[in-house]
Length: 390
Image (cartoon, helix red, strand yellow):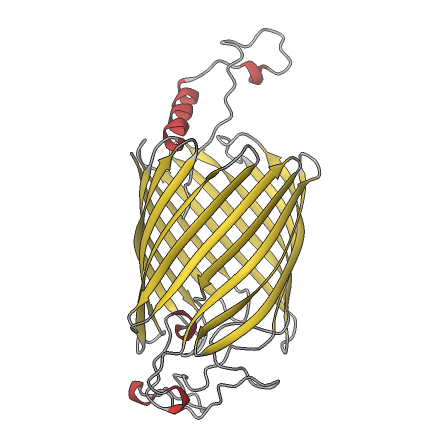
């Protein structure tokens, strides 16, 4: 979660523009609205806050692959020192298959801190854990450092996160029969280290690149190494003060690749369907007769998207601005193509948008909706937050 803050560029070089000034906007009178915006920005950036959240996610796919879930939780943000932030969050996530036949839930508690360590160096650390209704735990974490030295920005990040793609990978499944009878399978964690670089070529043109490696591993799901690399460039068509109707309009081209050692989008020994696609009764899970071992022609147990090669390139557009004193927005959309090992090249696309509603000087409600068809399925999500500054 992150703050949605309204920032302004404030000019007060003169109380009044002078006659004959070729650019009087630079020396326009300071209005009451300017003062209110500045006061609000100072309040937001120097105040602690509380956040409540509600989110929902759904996707396409069969009984094994489709995962529906929602989130309910909150976060407390406490400012410390000069620009430092300490936070603690608690989120409960109930998961279910599309027909609600199989359900599980997880409750995550995380604590973290972020801040500026030197003039050009900032960082963030986070530690947390999730308790699942299946009776087991996972641990998540993040450590990130960012170095800014115009025109270059470097960032390195190490992270450990839950893989929320299927019921198997997210919350795990407890088979009754078969090779895993009586043992939790799944709860896959993504462990990765990524380096990123951004270079400001000109005031409007930016180039960026990234590379990294990692592995995914779950309970009774062996480690699966992967590597990733990406590059692209962005061009600012419009870049104005934040209070403008359109403060930013940007075009971006991105090329990304990720490759796994094993295909683990399989459910052998944990499948909710038999080989004919018929649903298995809960007291018969594990009797699917499918092998959990990956081969060149068969995916191993894991329940997450992990092709040998996944390459996609897209053209993305981003726009943000201020509609009125109480409404700011951010829009993004992309189109492109993707290549997945064993599948024909496919077209991809998606859109997302955030509308932040400022109720008064203390309360804001940002709402985000998104949909895309990256990977083998289409997914949709919505996230609503209530932010209260104090």
